[in-house]
Length: 267
Length: 297
Image (cartoon, rainbow over all chains, first blue to last red; front, side, top):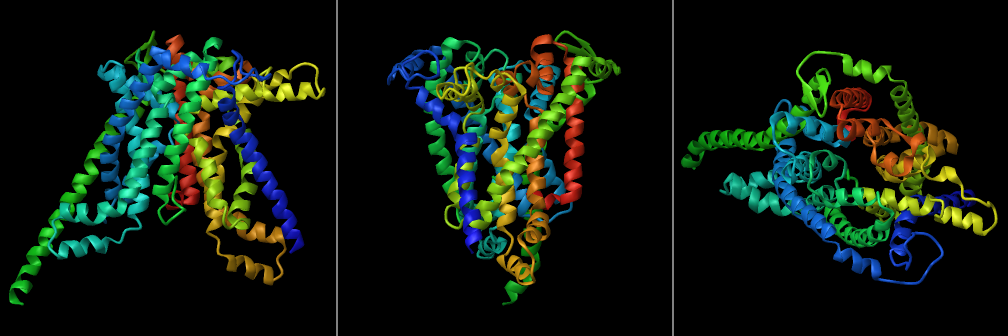
């Protein structure tokens, strides 16, 4: 018993140190230094300021990039939610030959390196003659958000007893009414969680966007080009810190909804 | 009564038709979307890797020139080897660092494990570029580590190898992917019933034997899942080496990116891309063969 306690103590310390230093240290420092009254992000501490936040909000290019990212993510989320839920239904609600092939077909984009999808889509748009713009960005984001939504919603649908919907049908509900009145309320938390994850994947997507955006700018693309100039760093710190805080809040919400009763779903 | 019995076959028939209709309506939209905007582009990437390369364009042809140009370039070959070395090294480090955490969370903590898992998920959803960039504050010449070591007098000049190096790339890769290793292994370990472990203990198994014969084999599906989730995406990394890498941290992804967006040689870019795609498919097939598709979902 005593030995077990000792092991537990060391493993607790180890876990705290690894998560603290390898995962959180840079994020926390970024937020702290966004309030530092200095142009370089390093010690010494020169005093507290909100100056960088003020300057960030005066940058027209940054605001435009944020706005572009927001509306791209909204469109992507809506379309992905519809297509992804359809895929999830086909993965879980029907028995047919080729169901596991269909599941693989939907899930494979999730393990493909994004760089490859990026260059493949660039070649594709070039080949079929669609000029690169925010529109091609939307088309591209949907192709990785549909699998994401499908996997999250399917994980929930697996747990829903199909006889519930059948009971509704026996009582006279049509297929659409049965879905709307029985299945939809049960999977609603998963749908909201899927929407939040799909939104944040699209909002944060850099690698694919980098190849298919042409001359437009989204927030990650703005960060990528702003990183090249040292004078932008305090502004990147400030806007990043704000976005981190918003993202943490939103993920907390999504996780609460997604988990529901189970914890062992794929994230 | 009679009406009900007579209606049965018709209702059943109608349900059957609605089932097929519903299935078709659910299968086809996502099927066609991914066909057009995922599978077709991937096929085009493959086909065009044999085309003749112009500047920022490709002409139909069948040539192995792009592959030859890639493999005969010593710099490219070195980076190819470098990439696999970095990614394999990081994968091993991830398992070594992550497994104890997963074990701790799954088998030794009872109330706080979901909270800690949540703490691991948060950073994954924080903007990727921001997190890479944030490492400069830690590793840079005037960063936290160097300032600290200099202030306590351990070093006189900043450690140069911390930033713009292979070490930096590896540290940031570990930061990026650790949650994807810990969580699947945690889920696998959490699912092992306590009775099995107790039975083994009662039969005289020591801690090493319990690990060797119970925990390790039963957590293998989790390890396979993390391999697919981590090793393959890492092969295509280019943002991390561009931001913190410097020349010694250069990876395959950087060549592909520069061929497509700067050098304009789409042929070589596609050829390297297809090599990467091929490796990806082989690895996925291998893992599915060993572990089974269902276990990965």
